[in-house]
Length: 128
Image (cartoon, rainbow, N blue to C red; front, side):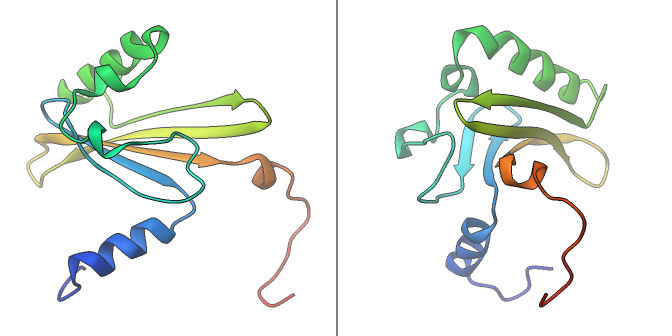
């Protein structure tokens, strides 16, 4: 619950997460992205207000459009994939954002660099 949290604190909380977040509204327009010094996919303030189709490489635009169409048609709620970017291994997930009635409000894109996570072995308990 976000009761009584100032917007700048909410933004700092989101920017502290070890993931990158972007929000695309129901009309495919980029409305938000989290900041961070170590972003995998660099963003410029100019991206806000642009169509998401203009923010992806041409070879992946058709796949992005297909995912968004599936979300809009209520055919799925999640799309996930992973790619190698140089030495990085990146896990990318798209989530349909819906209201209480199930109406499509937009898409949340969450990207995370998972190279180190993949190398975890055994277990490490709190304060070990």
